[in-house]
Structures are given as structure tokens and as C-alpha cells.
Length: 180
Image 1 (tube, rainbow, N blue to C red):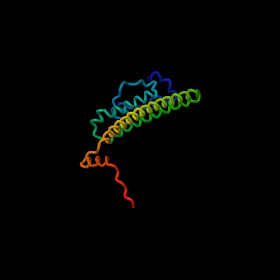
Image 2: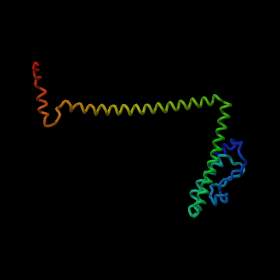
Image 3: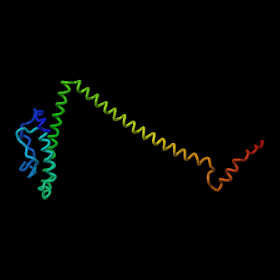
Image 4: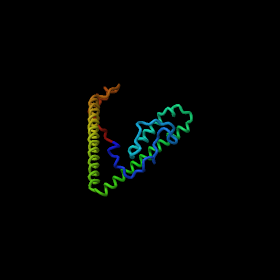
């Protein structure tokens, strides 16, 4: 991938000005590296990949596993992580610059992308609404089923020691009122 976009990084610093971890690199004793890199045409992507590999290597390196000086280990890991973050910021800056150039040269493209993003967001929210409606209908049905089960027992007299008397008194005519 890096070879296909190597021409896309014209404003880079010259190769070698960003030392990427490796055996003998300052503050990074004996990090094993993956495949050796050609020093002729490093790109930001190559540097980002190399700095990521250096971070990973610092965590699994035998020098650090067997090391006794914890402060040296912490310093080396911190330097690797800082280098990775610096190159990641440079890469982000590069893409933001390209985005700005695109918005100046082709503003209609930016509008098309915004419209596409809004449509995708609308679709996602529609699906979410449908999902919530399905859950709502499900729980409404459960509630109706539960309330339907509770209505049936109310037709029967309530169980208890006075249930017979309550039923018998319900069938009696009302008592006449006494005049005052």
C-alpha cells in the first residue's frame, strides 16, 4: 500500500531526519525490526508503520523482558510511543491538508460527501427506530397478555375465609333506608 501512495507525500522531511527505532537507535537499545527498509524513499506511511513496529517490538523485546532497570524500559517505551504519536499527527495533518485542497478545488465533491454521510446517518437512524418499534410492539403484546391473564381471575370470588359471605351478601337486595 505504501508503494502505491508514495508519491502522495511531497512535503515530507528528508529521509533519515526521523530516525525510526532499530538496533542502536538512541534511547532504544536493541529493538528487533521487521523487514529492513530502503532508506531512499521513506513516506509518512512507512514511518508510521515503522514506528508502530518499534512500539510493538519494545513491548515484546527480550532486552525489556530480561531487563532489570525499569526506568530505562519505561523511557524506551515512552520514546517509541511518542514517536508513533508524532508520526500519526503528521499523517493526520497531511490528510487534513489534502482534504482542504480538495474542498477548495472541488467544493461540490465535499457537498456530495456530506449529503452521502447524511443519507447514511438517516438510514442508520431509521433502522434504529424500526428496531425500537419492534421492541415496543413486543412489550405491548406482553403487557396485554399479562393484563388479560389478570382480568380472568377477577370474575371469580377472591379466595379467603370470607369469600362465601361476600358472595352471598352481594346477592341480597339492598336494605331499606330508615326515615330520619
